[in-house]
Image (tube, rainbow over all chains, first blue to last red; front, side, top):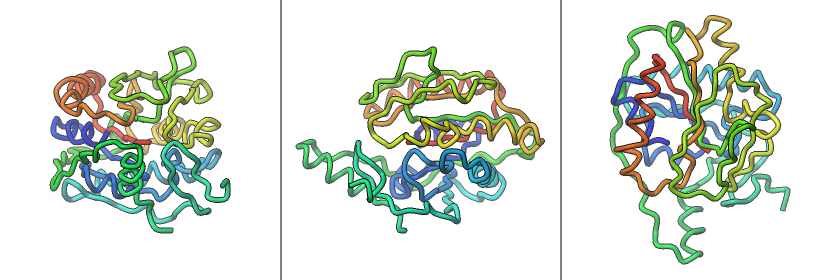
Length: 97
Length: 162
């Protein structure tokens, strides 16, 4: 999807990539990336948390005016409340065993 | 907590399965298109790659590889009218609230408040992960998507990978 963003940007459509994988995004380098340190699948926050969903969407839109160069990456300031890990095809919650 | 090291985890996972080392795309620079108007005057669309489809549509293949399917979703779609089929991440929250990965209700609210100019006529779901034939994205599916966005007068795309 980062490749898609790069292609769109080159055609004059501005993009913001809202990623939960910081290292993955750093490799592909989309034009603008908001990194959100949440489990994959919670890019905009938790279920029912409309305030955070809106805040993350606003932060993404804000990068349209703040980013000075292609490949800009910004870290969303808060992180997921509980520890999580990545298991390909698996669960996100450490406590789930 | 520190960000998850997905690259290391995936290299280890696929290596243990006997797959050859994945050839990660590494770019040193990126294009940037500066807007010539404020966001409050822009038409904004969304893209998710999380295996999201409307309930009237076929499900995505949860284990798909090289799936270039791209669904158009009407801007006024009911947020409760989605299904998610993707075996590569935990979508339990998004199953209950699609705005976790595809914030169409939040975008509509920002448009109603005047913070963005308009929600695009069509929002999008596709480019599901694990696309190895990148040249097809570059030469076919990517340009076709760009043309659809241009047809809708889209200025901005918010893309959320999962």
